[in-house]
Amino acid sequence: MRRHDLLAELHRLLVPRNYLEIGVNVGGSLTLSRTRSIGIDPYYTLDREIRCDAHLVRTSSDEFFAREHPLAHFDEPVIDLAFIDGMHLAEYAFRDFVNVERFTHPGTVIVIDDMLPRDVPEARRDRSVPSGRSAWAGDVYKVLDTLREKRPDLVCLEVDTAPTGVVVVINPDPASTVLLEASDDIVESYVVPDPQHVPAEIMDRRRAHPPRELLDLPVWGELASARDLPAADARAKVEQAVAGLR
Ligand SMILES: C[S@@+](CC[C@H](N)C(=O)[O-])C[C@H]1O[C@@H](n2cnc3c(N)ncnc32)[C@H](O)[C@@H]1O
Image (cartoon, rainbow, N blue to C red):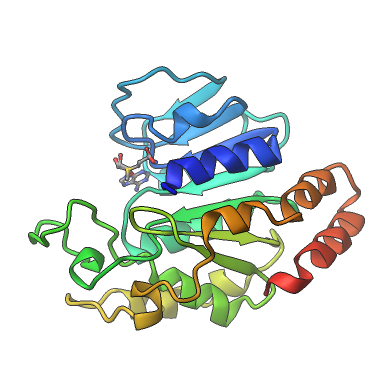
């Protein structure tokens, strides 16, 4: 299954009230949305129809989240479904995750693209170096280890999508400051010269869920229905729904 098919299925299962996308490019993923959406990309050039109420922002994700009310296009400043697919360098994807998480509720689903590079050249930081691969995943895969190490409260599900794999993060906590407090050390550890050290379990996808099996889990309906509950009840419901997934 390709990542856009997975994303389309998540839209169908979650029926999100809104969708935020970092990295729009020509609109391949944004065109899947039928809900109120925000797309952020300093260089987007749409080549297809967008079939939703979208606020397209021609800026970097860092500048966007530095704004006073970045989610003013939504009814409330909380995100139901997010897709992080902007700059493919770990420090950018890390900051994107931290910024998105500030605007989550317990039922929010965050999809991060390019998390399972297939080989070391595909995971290079310097895109200008030829790799023999058409895709460039970069080193965003490093964010997965960070989340697992620093935030065991999150549920991070690797998914075997084509071409470069995604990670679906559930059970976010907008009140957590753990990542922000450690960010200087984390980012310093990311920025190292090529070639990158890519763990074998990332490249061979041994922990990755087959997409269909993941989509068949009952958790998506539970996450969607948690949105209507008071915060404490929603957290308890989501904790129960994800209990077997860690
Ligand atoms: C892989 S493409 C996105 C593809 C799109 N999500 C899809 O699936 O069809 C990555 C995009 O991220 C954008 N980008 C690069 N740096 C960015 C940044 N700092 N903030 C937001 N977007 C960025 C690029 O301009 C590029 O269009």
